[in-house]
Length: 285
Image 1 (spheres, rainbow, N blue to C red):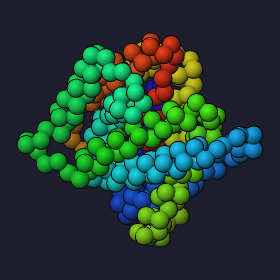
Image 2: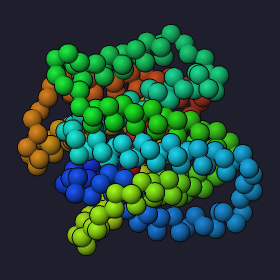
Image 3: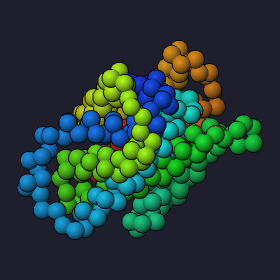
Image 4: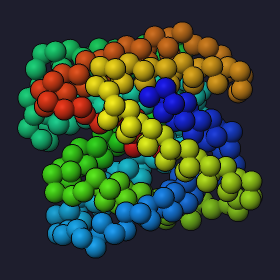
């Protein structure tokens, strides 16, 4: 999980380095299109899969939601500090909990309700409305968390009947197709160096998913999830030393509050279901 955090912060660093010369939809498209090469080993599973109309509808819905979320995330990276992107990224599993209650009929016990309210309080700490300007980048991060939560909920439905490898592969394909029209509308010719950086993003993100999966196999949620807070530490250090961004103690405090709430939710879920749930930041990249 330590390595996973470093890899995912590396993804944000490269996107931040590229800046807004490449529009957010195009950067997202290139990252996912070039990342499709890593899905070649999954092609054999498609031949053995029995996918019906329900599964294809869910694939399409998830691809649309996730494509919109990815574009918002790439946009936010060009607008607000890396630390704020990382801290607000912890919100997605909180929204998943709310969505599971609204759309999947799961019961919200008081500890989970309290954790949700605490997480929302952490957002207020980060944004501090009335004390500073809330930028479009902040709004983009709030929106992407909702969209990613919807994507995760659909993935939960799909996991009942579809192999995990196919679910991941269809997500990458769906995002590529969903983002393509927006990318073409704002297309600028990337340089070979920019293409190389975006391919590096695809490589690092794929490696991060692998190391995270290994961590979930090797240790319980109570061990792996607290370590994800270090991703915020790496992001603050990177922003300060590489990009000259100030250290905002309110962002660190708000991120810690949100992550604490997420930890409560995920640990309770693991104990209730008798298994280790998925990671909190696994699909955005």
